[in-house]
Image 1: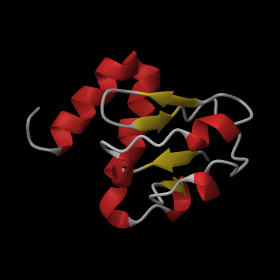
Image 2 (image 1 turned 90 degrees about the vertical axis):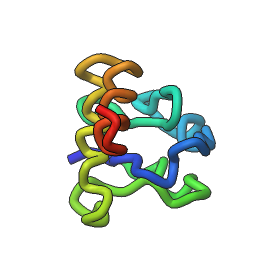
Image 3 (image 1 turned 90 degrees about the horizontal axis):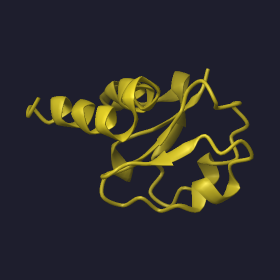
Image 4 (image 1 turned 45 degrees about the horizontal axis):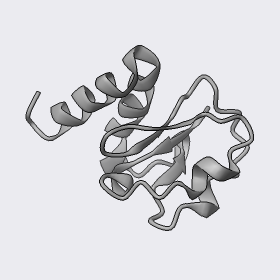
Length: 94
């Protein structure tokens, strides 16, 4: 299981979580930060640092933000471009 960054991060991108991540698995994309689910070691260091409460353990993610599991995983599939495509799909533009 990994941590997931959800909708509250969109267009905010406070980078405090990046600073505390011991394995550097949080990446900046055009509109939000994402966590690489393969690199994440489930340490929870990032969660309390997020000022907009956008970071959740995958198994505790609010139902309305479940699509953000795929948004974060898209980083591994194709980097920032893949994340942007997933966000566009969520907003009905894809």
